Image 1: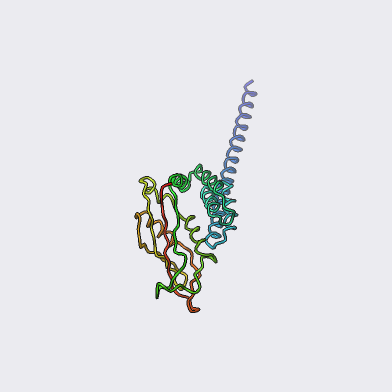
Image 2: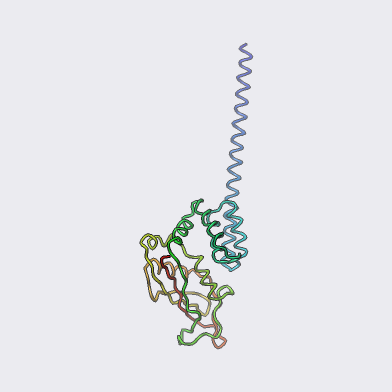
Length: 241
C-alpha cells in the first residue's frame, strides 16, 4: 500500500513538474510573441514616419495602417490625421474620427485632446498666397518655392496634421481664441524660419512657430533664374464653434 502511495506521489510530482514546465514555456512563448509584435509595430510606425517626412503619404498610410491594425496607438492617431488631410488616402472625416477614437481608447493623449478640442473649437490656417523676395517685399518671386513638390495649400494642410493638441490644453480649458500670424521665410538653400509678427496667445504663437520650424526643407524660390530667400505670411486662427 505504501509502495502504491509512493508511486502515486512520485507520479503526481512528475506531472506537476511537467505542467509547470509547459506553463513556463507557454508564458515565455507568449511574451516573445508579444515583444515581436511590439517591435513590428514600432518598425512599421518608423517606416511610416520616414515616408511621411519625404512626402510619400500613400506609403505612410500603408505603413501606419499596418501598425494601427496591430494596436499601435500613435499609428492610429496618424492614420486619422491622414484621413483628415486627404494625404495618401481620400479625405474622410468620419474615418478620421474613428481612428482618433481608437487611439484614445488605446491611451493616446494626443487623440483624446484633439477630439475634445475639435468638439468646441475650429482651427483655420491663414496664408498670404504668394512668396515675395526679401530684397523688396513688393517683388513677387518668379518661381515660387515648393513644399515636397507641392504648393502652399498642401503646406497648410500639412500644418493641420502637425498641431499637437496636448500643447493647447490651456487654450481649451480657458476658451482662448484669436489669430497668430508669422512671417515665414524659405532661404535660397531651402531652410525655413518663422517669426511671430502678430500674436494671439503665447501658447498659440509657440505652437505655430514650432510647426514652421519643424518643416522639411523646401525647393527654394527663383528670381532672375537664381535661388533666392523669400517670405510670406502664415497663421492659425482659433475660434469657438
